[in-house]
Length: 255
Length: 160
Ligand code: HEM
Ligand code: SF4
Ligand code: FES
Image (cartoon, rainbow over all chains, first blue to last red; front, side):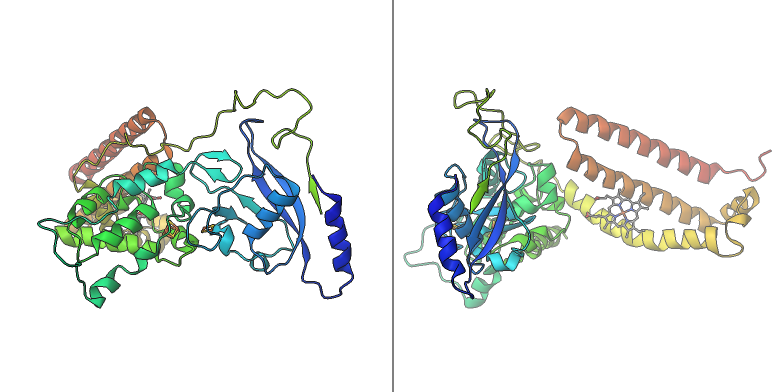
């Protein structure tokens, strides 16, 4: 669905020797169950400033070339966690990945994150992911009467779990984990990160319950320390370390 | 700028007849063993923790046992060519090597069996497949461990 007007912009740019625009190829994994039962790669060539992001390229393709291209995004600024996708084989947020950083000389591969059902193009069914999240009780659990003022905490106690508060539930980590790819019953790194956030919170009293949940056969012991999750996390959370801290808490609790 | 629309049907707008449409969508590909709200809750035992610890602890001991074993059998004192009935009989005359080999047998078998249990848990999708593969694994493990133990303790150097 190339529009002739776009060619004109291209010519106008050619007039300037130092135009920032380059021609990049986006090779996108398309799937539409209303048309075919098979997924397929499709190439789109666009001219774009390499200082823009993969999300901008996807917008350009959707708005100017093919309106049927389907993907999720909300904030477009790395906060909401909707646009995790597999870009050149690595899980990233499209809105935080600059085109110049992923070698636009070659076709840029964009596909849905793995281990979850692809519903259309880059959109996956996130229900199993959020089920695992819900199963670790990601909320403050306390006993006794509610205090009349806020629950205070020392800066050191707050620091203890600071890293895992940064999670935006994008699923980049869980869908990069080979154990999760093969067995969706595994809680996965994101659920463990969010359990960690409460287990190590001095104000919370449900730690024991969460540890018990993660001690079971689909819990932390399935982790093989592959570090894919740490590599994938767009928030820079040390995911594997958090998992390891939960393992250690379980062991020291018993011995 | 142009979109390279390929001729085959996955993308849309096909002239020919498609098997699928809005009312008859194609089946989606579900991941193996998806988690739902019906996924059973935990067993509340520490088995997985002990299994995890055992892999690490037995691994450390196995480094010593296996490297020692390989050195004695394959490297020192003429290498493999020296191995024979007399060599084995000579070593098993000492309780030290009996205990060494017994520990190596048990640790390596349990370590390897638990490792394969992990592999089955990772790769076998259907509950039935998982169950029968594990039964096969446990049978083979028990058989090998018992047979090996029997041989180490009942070995008779004067057998004819
Ligand atoms: C020589 C010293 C050894 C060390 C230090 C060692 C250490 C380990 C460790 C730490 C694991 C767990 C890996 C994980 O959970 O990610 C493991 C897994 C495993 N080991 Fe060993 N091991 C040794 C020898 C052996 C032997 C002799 C066998 C075979 C009888 C064996 C078979 C396995 C298998 C099948 C696995 C599972 C593989 C997997 O989880 O993907 N290992 N080993
Ligand atoms: S830990 Fe990182 S990669 Fe995993 S869901 Fe949270 S933000 Fe995304
Ligand atoms: S669109 Fe919100 S995180 Fe990328």
